[in-house]
Image 1 (cartoon, rainbow, N blue to C red):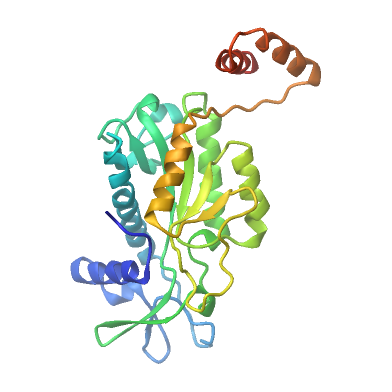
Image 2 (image 1 turned 135 degrees about the vertical axis):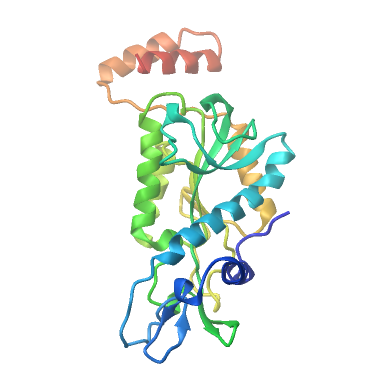
Length: 289
């Protein structure tokens, strides 16, 4: 069974990349003094360069890691965790596939009815590392460097939200599929209300961090927002239990903007059905017409 995100996972990424396909210059910033840093330390005042080459490498590594993380959960339920799925009918194209999904079938091209959950992975290197004499030395958590990793980046949050909305508005084929944003950092306070509203509105079912200890000094590290739009998981069992609860509910996304009179008429008609399930089905049918 795979483990949650730790410093050891970041060491694994750097070692694997250096051994197989990357030079140090593709993974680290180089200071004026010739030091190799994963991020510019906050105390660094010298010349700075940008580093784009690491993005694709860490993106692929974290997607594969997420597949491994979800595979044990999936297999126990006769499902499969699959990387990079395509489902044109809900907007997952070869140019913009899902990062990871739990599916009924183990293949890349999927039908909407065979997709159980969609995960967008927004992870990156969290701690700062110095690469020195072939060794990796941790020199601080994300509060000690100038970078904004993972879900702390506004552009990562906005991309995740935008892609999720695109899936939701394309039609009703994805209405039963939960969408989860998987990260390895907390979120900024400016997004607390937004993620809760996105969850309550049914667009995204959660921003989940699978990094129990992103700060070295036990500093302020949010466990969850008020309505659990964001959750930090502290064990693999907590993650699996929450995912189980989400999938058992068999929820349905719906959205509309109608007058109170129209809504009242729909509710009145739906209420004539015999069971709660039938009332809900009638309501969804009428609100989508």
